[in-house]
Image 1 (spheres, one colour):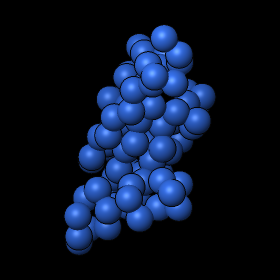
Image 2 (cartoon, rainbow, N blue to C red; image 1 turned 90 degrees about the horizontal axis):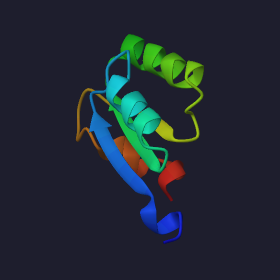
Image 3 (cartoon, rainbow, N blue to C red; image 1 turned 60 degrees about the horizontal axis):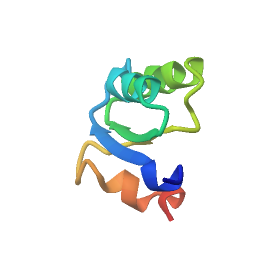
Image 4 (cartoon, rainbow, N blue to C red; image 1 turned 90 degrees about the vertical axis):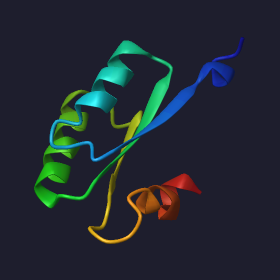
Length: 82
């Protein structure tokens, strides 16, 4: 089985300041990648720092969600997803 066919991608809305679920998922499963969103500006900043400090920026993509609109919109509207 190729690595690509075993790649797992998941999403976590409202990841919070710690981004704990994406961090744990990627630490425990080397073939997992995560997309995470956060509305709160302060929590987003800390989540971004935590992801970087853990060396997982290539596997966890953090998106800033707006307080209005659909929480998943930034993931689908982002140039990173195209």
